[in-house]
Length: 52
View 1 (cartoon, rainbow, N blue to C red):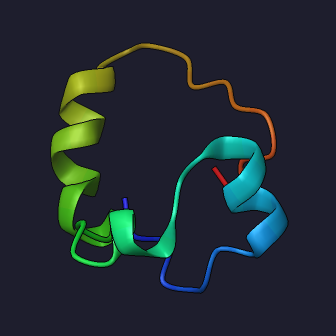
View 2: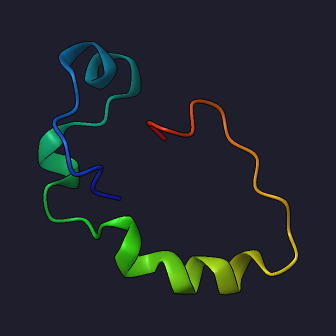
């Protein structure tokens, strides 16, 4: 998923996810419908959801 902003160096170090890795990845609006179908009646739980 492309976060649509630059990943800070410290976060890249912690997660091993780089800006280059997400540069051409889809943004959330491009996958939202299929994600909601996948989730169905499931419960979505996330830590640091603004970033993740």
